[in-house]
Length: 365
Image (tube, rainbow, N blue to C red; front, side, top):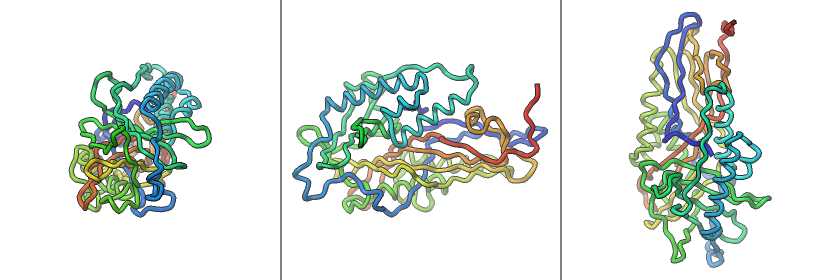
């Protein structure tokens, strides 16, 4: 698991001339920026939701005690893997977008000089006070559950995680985690035994929108300031406002010396999870990928990568840089035709590349 900063992570980039540096302000690349996916559902987006005929045969994905054991195991092994950046061990407790994000964090750390690497601090989730959302599922469905968690004992949850049982080896692994600081979680519909109801995240006529449209709206908030679908799909929240603010500030930070363009990219993580809420709507958790491309406006300028880019760009000035991000997102969706609420999202840069400045020469001792 990556220890994300609250919703944002700064990456310093500057545009400069090859000989006499010309700084154009530090760029704060907010990693709460999000990406897109197709609005229409597809066969690959089918959700683990039971049909009406199977409803009477639903059983909980696991018990509450078993879920707490899963969380405890995750914390223990994650600490051990993180201490030595052991990707093989990490792969036994993480999968999907979260694993990609954590490995990226390892890679970024390994790109820094040893003296600049922060000592690892062990942590654990407060399982006793975790809010568990364990859905009833039909036989044969992929098993999963969500949990609102805090790493501080007795404190309100600050993260919303999804654990899924991996086919083939039967291990429970965390596949998604999202920062939910300063955002209220919705009331999940629970039965008398405390179990939740899973619903379809796409193609669900009982919901105003599905996960695919939520992905598109998230990207639009950043790419256009929400002018196309973002502000139509989402009512203003801290999370959605933050995306729009990033669009407003990041897009113009280089003035006439450079450009920044955000776009969706092929999304490798199409799984989405949804839980019914007491008002008949749903809490939907999904993932996306997006890119950010910074480029100089004309020859004679260069982009000087920051220290966090060393693992990918090795300190070599570039004429343009294309960053790739993997993100986890969550939103509440109403049952009627009304705006949804983006309540949290967390991203990590997983790649960076771009053409070097042809005139650049490494410094000599």
